[in-house]
Image: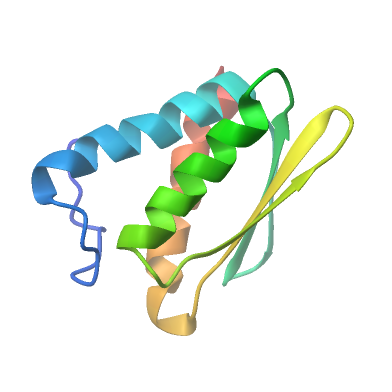
Length: 110
């Protein structure tokens, strides 16, 4: 996504690093995304295929993302074959979560 206008002003990730971070999410979704659901406008539920190093990769990306965008609340739950990533935001950042949810379409097409 070349237009990163959806990234909120509160994001502290340097502007030049934002396309790289979006690419990391796209890569994760493209490689590992199995299912997506929206339990509500402020929550996103992702099922990711497990594998060697995947949980660590998901945890690292979630930690770095919450470090620059503290409004995200990530919960990583490992399972036998899946890693569940739940993402929640407050009402003020619902549009940001919606934009991230649209990025999952990259994974669903893979």
